Image (cartoon, rainbow over all chains, first blue to last red; front, side, top):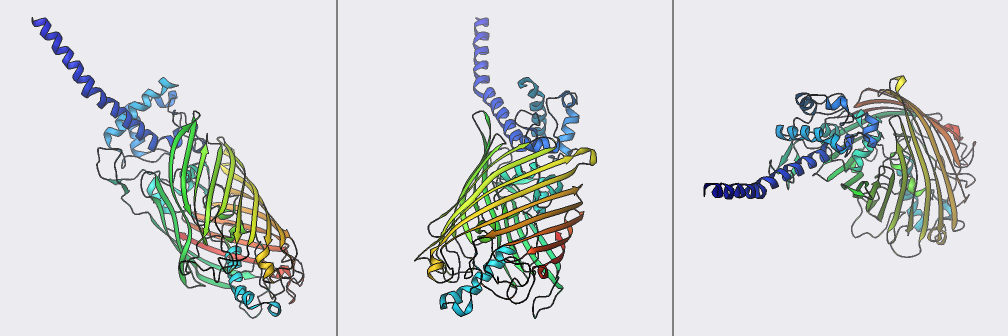
Length: 113
Length: 459
């Protein structure tokens, strides 16, 4: 009886997660994609390669490269927040959680390489 | 082809009315509006001017993309209706995108214009206000109003308001948009087309050749157009705009009175260009043109028609071993075929069919972002017509020939990126058809050689 109840609860929890949690995750993923598109694509290109015309002219980093990927999350956060070299600072425009999500997004870029 | 002032003795009343108007139009065309870099873009993006410009107003690849995307890229805080929603219905810049330009200049010609002072100090030459920046996430503007010290009033200047977006087409990036503008080629991305072409600044005082193609500034700020553009795969750029006459300061609805160009129907402008960009090289080749049917001084009656076909190129080479100096080559050729039936009927042309060729080329070396040196050549020739290009002191032609040619040398220094000091020398090998006594009043082409000194402040 107890195991059946436990099974039902687990199923309900899964349904709740699927119904509530998963869309939230997808929405967050969708949001960070929009943030990346609005702020980063101009130089770093959609795939993070920095191969856009403007990226080439400014020497934008390949976000998938070891040089970038070996940086810690804190270092990437600092670069996005404060800017570095020709890259402008986004700390006054983007919220801290957006920058955290962007760092995670950048981490995921090599998977699509 | 633009008409010069007509022979007074042979002018009809209509032509006499047209003379000052045509001259005013010529002044607008010859002394084309200056082009600028705008600090409010810098305030919006958090980037220095040099991120978009080799030297203002010359756009690099990043600057072209910024313009292509509708002037909306920003890194600064915004006012939104819901800070948790990235699809907010309101996203306004916290800083109002306003900029100011102040130009003061000195012009001296080799020979003074009869009865006038030489060495003219304009303080200011002009002053501009810009509304330049993002209006929303996808709409932005370059809007300029300019005070002209000779006319002593503000007037609407170059304007480009655009919607832009990005998607994919056939798996490649597609940037596209809609533009509302008032000058054919003002929406263009390169500095090889007229609106943003060399010379980037010029005197309001020195005489200029009387003939020029319509697309080479002849419609600037005198038309209104709506068009679309697209850049596919960062290589292929196409654009098109339909223009109507919109005479600033004229009563509405338009009667056409007092205006040498009154577009009948719409005037289609077209543009196609191909570019390739690498880390150190940027090459563009393209074509553009416009077809205009116009009735001088009226909106009904016989029409003149103009068809301008043009090709252009721009090549920028960054030299990393020389501190990222940039060497630029630019050029354009414009062929204008015109059928001036209305002007011929009114006695302003000896025959209806004319053509005009314009060739402009220049080379520029940018020493970093502070100094640039440029040299350019220009040549105009076309169908001689003693009625269309009649004799007149300084501005006329003794033999009715529109041929002019010469060179321009420019040295600019930007001690800081929003203050520019320029020295520019313009020399003529031929002016309105001849080298000597070109106007029939004893003036030589070289008499119009000019030295032009400009100080520009933008903030």
